[in-house]
Length: 344
Image (cartoon, rainbow, N blue to C red; front, side, top):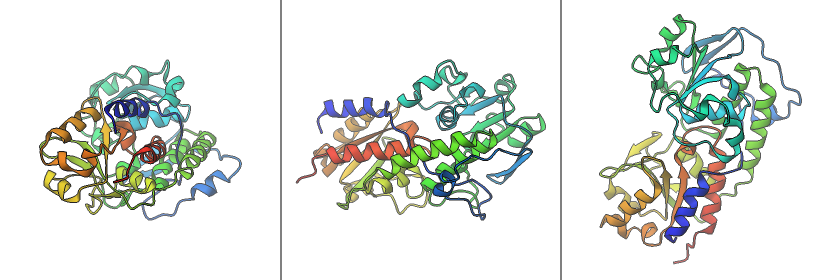
């Protein structure tokens, strides 16, 4: 694939205009949840009854009313609220992974997401200055004593916290493996928290349609999901969003037997696997172009089939974590894969 094509892909992946998702309500890990089809077929959306108590990653959270002042941490949480038409509820947004996708460009204008108050995980004092009634975190580590504040302390100050369920670390709650049903369950649950159940159902249906339009490749191709790292590469492993997206596209993950979301993999292991394609995560701090240069300059990896033939696929970093971009990412990667010349 010519360098000009890679550059075009990097630009394209930051402006994907489609939607994606499917749903099931997030409840305690052992409880059953309605399927996406059942939710979409409900016809009329239910009205949330408060107080609403949820088991979120093992922490009981009670909402007396729909949150009005929200601090979001990570792109995935900010974009979920924007996609649900709740951008006006965000009083502060922090630790964003990149610009919002094109289909949310209008929704972000004039909101706090457009001007993050912190490029990193914010401290407790900075969060409390915004007087939120909810901290919506993409990672559990975001709501810790050395971050926005631990959940118990925030609760004692009248601030609820909600962690993206896909990011739960307790084995009883962590998805293993992550599926689109579980990712999209968050949309339904957030819709319930904010009493915008109709908007959540509509978003779920739109994203499910995108996912349904993805035809998995049937050639038995293998892929390396290269996220970051130089001396020791950090790659998508077997139970997280990268694996979920690769499954949807029909690619066999060379690190798929590692029971983790991401993992370190030696260059020697990658050379032995010799993947047919390399998925390059494009981040502002570690671009797809930087990764290509690293692969081509390394004497060992320069001999990989995918590197010699420039078989690269590009995905923007914010789309690599569970959220409203995942089905778009699958659709876009499938399109890129279809355009690759894989003839030997």
